[in-house]
Every structure is written in structure tokens, then in C-alpha cells.
Length: 109
Length: 414
Image (cartoon, rainbow over all chains, first blue to last red; front, side, top):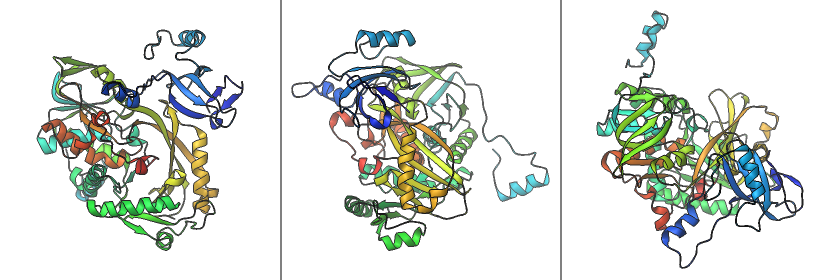
């Protein structure tokens, strides 16, 4: 079972406590954006076989949203971090680099 | 290819079964093919088969990273139905179901199609309205389904508990000519028929790159060397995104795990397929007597071919209430497959931004039942550039807002 540490309440939450919220760090496109931007924002999810960044909610717990860095191939968790950021913090990136040198996800690496 | 028949069985019985041939050849790849299909699952093999049979394109290779039929073709719960709400879905699934009817004769390979009937239980007021609407839509589409009462449900499935306190059975959508088939045999049958037409099925051969010139595909790089081709069909389900990346475009897909499990074999107790979408569970009894149970998907991206245990617990917990007799059953095996889900939960059968390159993916949780129809449409698309079966499933529908809203039918595992 997937276990993620909630960065807000500090609990190691099991998967049944959590709700998956999809891809992290999406840039929202709305009125005024081009068709391509809107299309990509709505449908073109990252679908990596490897390092992935996601939003999760500690639904049956403190209720807060947070971010997680995870490997979709091994289910390994690299770390969790605050939802109040538009990109993963350096220590998360370093933790991933230690285990997956040369990783790339969207513009992050 | 030597024909399979009752006479062949008798002949082989008299000579200690020494005369059976291998069902398909395992050749080394040639330098060039008219068409290359990536992925030797049901959909890929069916595409190759109908390219040869319907359009005379027989210089074809089917390339497979693992072994033939070892992905989702061998991991599903073998249910065949076509009771969909939207016209494009009903058309392609009904084409598939009708092809399944005489596929054993067509392929000269027993795929054990068993039109035992598929029942989709309505357990909420919302489902009653939804399924009655589907039944009416099916009548207009020429798909034979009907709305049946709880009494008829009990007649067809004596082991069901109609009065579950949480999930009462209020009626069902019944498709009499739906059912099951032997999933491996579908892949094997198509493979044998493709091989007999002179097509090469190349297993243990991973595609590592797609070659293109002037915006057109000219071949693929593989672990067994480069192979040239005029047309390329990508039919790889869970790994479609990776192949698309090699071909230089992106797909609106996410890969997630879907699970199934089987019980120990028991005496025959249920001779139809029962689906209960409210509780995300469905069940049928295999010819060996095992209860085959499928559940819901995980909510997050996953390439591991195993899912979360609590989903199984949820599925089984709900099914035990509807089928109290299964509460004492031991479960033998559980497994997962990687399904590729699109934004509207309907598949993509389409041309791609790369000329000569076609994609067939996004079947999500409902690919097995569509295999012959998908192959038929995909072959037509690859051979002629257009197919009425696949038209609505094109890649640009997301940009144009032409979604196929089947999440009612396909939002859960089936």
C-alpha cells in the first residue's frame, strides 16, 4: 500500500486516507489563451514511466492538499512537499537525483 | 497452415499427436515491410489480420516487446458486450461483438465464444433511468438489449440477493448475445491466421525508435535492428505514450492499474455475466468453475501491473452483499494490467501528426470486447485512410470538443 507523509499534519498516511488529485504544477489556461494551450491544459497530462509529480489530498485526515514526488514504475516515493509552490523544492529534486540521476519531468530536472 | 478439424484430431490421435504444427512461425525480421504493427496483443494482431484479409496487404510484421498476448489481452476478464449509449461506441463494439459470433470459424481456431448474456444491474434510481435510456438508444442503434425486472434477474441468476440493504437490485440492462470468450485464444487465433497469410510475428523485439523523413514514417528501430515500412500502426495500450514520444507527438493519455481476481473453482452456479457498476464490481464463472471478478481502477498513474489491495477489498465487500454465497470462497490469484485512459474514457483510433503513422490506444478498461471491431476499423483506416468505424475516435476530437461521453458505461472497469 502506498504511504505518503503529509507535510502538514506530519502523519504517514496510508493510501486509504488519501485522495489522488492528478498531475502537479499545472499552469491554468482560460479565457484569452490559444486553442492549443487550452487543449494541453485540459487533456495533455504527463504520463511518465518513472519520476512523476502529483497532487494528493489528505482526505481522511487533516484534509490538506499537498504534493508528492513518486516513481510510477516502482511505486517508490521520493518525498512530499507543500502545495503552496509552483515547482518542487530543491531538496525534493536532490532526493530524486540521488536515486534517478538525469531525471527530467516537463521543464524540471 | 494445416486446418484444425474433427478429422485432424482423429488423424493425430492415430499417430500419437506427432503431426501438430506450431501455430505460428517465429521468423527473424525482414529488412522491409509494407506495414509494421507495434504490439502483438489482440488489437494489433486483429489489425494485421484484417489488413491482410480485407485489403490484401500481407507483407506485414507485428512486433512485440514481450510475448504475444501477454499484456492486457491476457489480463482482462473476457467480457464481451456492446450495450453502449453513444452511436460511435455502439457501432464499433457491436461490430466487434458480431465478428466474435463467428470468429472461431473465420480463424479456424476455437476462441470459445460463449454468448451467455451480460447483465448490468441497476442498484440506484439513477442507474434505472440510465440503463432504460441505454436500452432505448440500443434499440435505435440496432443493438439488441432490453430492460428487465428484478424478478427476471432472479430467474437468470438464482444466487443473487435482490434485497441487499445497501445495494438492492432494482432491475437490469440485459444483452442476451453478450458473453465471454477465451482471451488468450483470441490472440493465438489471430496470430495463427496472420502467420498463415505470410505475416511475420516477431516477439521479444522492442521498438526503440521511429524513423521519419519529411514528416512521413519510413521505419522503426528495434532491438533486432532497423526495419523499414511504409505504414506504421502503434497498438500498444499502456505504453502508447512512450511510442508516441518516439514518433514525435503526444497523446492525451494516463496509464493506471486495473485489477482482477479469480476464486477457487466451484460447481456451476451462474451462467451469465453480472456487472454491478454502482459497487465497481463484476463477476462471471469461467469454464473451469472459477469465479472471475473484476474491480475498479486505482486513482493514480502506475506502470507496475499490480494495484492497491484495498480496491479488491472494496469490490469483494460489495459483491458479497449481492452474492452472499461467495463469502466463503477462497481467492486463488489476483493480477493487474496497465490501462491507458483518455480524457473522455473512449479510445483513440486515428491518424497522427506523423504521416503514415496510425495509433490505436486509449481502450482503458474495456478493450478486450472490442478487439475484432477495433482491428477491422484500424485496418480500414491504415489501408484507405478513412473508416466510418473509427472516424469519431480521432485524436483531434479533444481539441474540437467532440467528446464521446461514455463515462456512464466505461467509467468503471468492465
